[in-house]
Image (cartoon, rainbow, N blue to C red; front, side):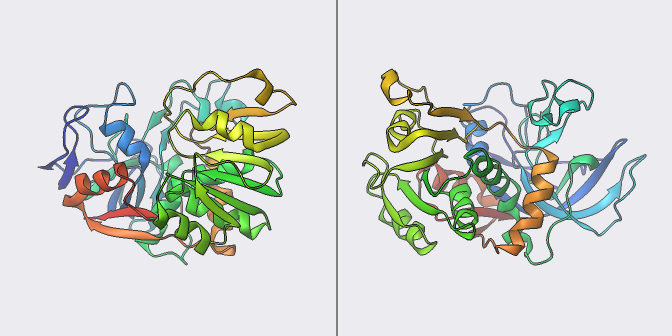
Length: 327
């Protein structure tokens, strides 16, 4: 099978011809139809996340069909469409797994990071962490739902009830979360990379009440803010924008260092919290809700061999919505 492989952090991906993997106990073999390109992929490829499996096939927004079942797998049939997300395996026995916090499992393994992912024609997935996808979405439309959608959904929930919600960094996750927020009648304020008129226009087209540069003050007091951009300096900016009792959610898996800030902007029972990964319950609830909104994903489709170009466009902030690779 063809696969785009990371051989060392910071190195360009290379096209390799690899054997089709065989599913082991509890696993399924998935023939990949589409794989989204996520900022987390960029953090892995650029070496910002430590200790990846090497060599590694990145990619964790995978849509495909079941090609074969490993021993002991039931509930899936060959030819059935499934989605495979970032959280690829948990122990099922630790205090986190047993308390509904499997996203915090210390032994967890992650698709496209510590497990081979979907920048390939085939991939292996734990059957427990494969999900049926809403029929309303084509393969390339469904791919961003599996991380941008899931993380956006979890971050949105953690922001709590909010009349006005700010979103810092208007990329793949933000464009999905904005639709969810508008569906609930919330006002969305989009903070984009300074000077990025395309992102401002995109946010306004999705119903944002306001869109402006991330270094600009908020035009109204916010009840909550979600930060998708991996920029630590946005944390104090968001704290200054939210009201007393408001919440700032850091939704990325990696962020540059948060600079020091005066206690006064945290005081007043403001809250700063992070989002870590996802749970299967998140996936079930979001995938049921998305077609009801309905969430529409904006995608740029590229061939598998263009994975490095897709990552480069993401790195440069040149994507509107999400890039999706197809074998």
